[in-house]
Length: 181
Image (cartoon, rainbow, N blue to C red):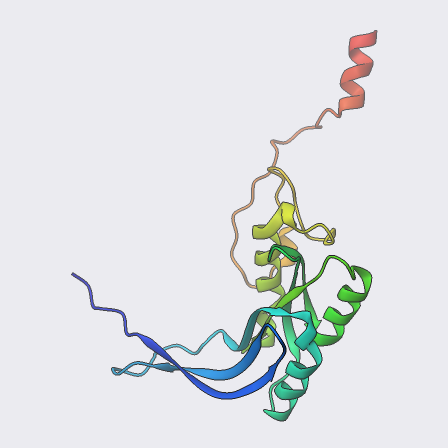
């Protein structure tokens, strides 16, 4: 048997806000006893499936705590399904998305990444994984078996890519023309 994974504990620091249904708490995950980690964490701050009602409150609290506001965000519908994924200034971009889809967007998630250089890759991975759910994303999502553009990832990344065999691919219109001759 392998080593038992160290457990994390959560330390609640403060209640940030509340309404009739929800309370928003801020806290920190603490490592269990044992050796210190050999790697750094991927995310500085996360918030998952928070009601849009608390957008301004959480933004102000993040600023007071000295955290950055850039990262990756996900806009969710009333059922919690991801409908849009993006990166940049989390709260400004979410406000624009909520304004564009007032009736659809009810919750949001955000991830402030420890190293900004990884934001684009994480965003791309999430978009590709969520695929058909993202009704409002059109730029990077791919439906069916088509692959995305490998250039969506960072320089220096090794990759494997599927390509069609050499030669000219026949388009549907060309096939139809041959049948009608």
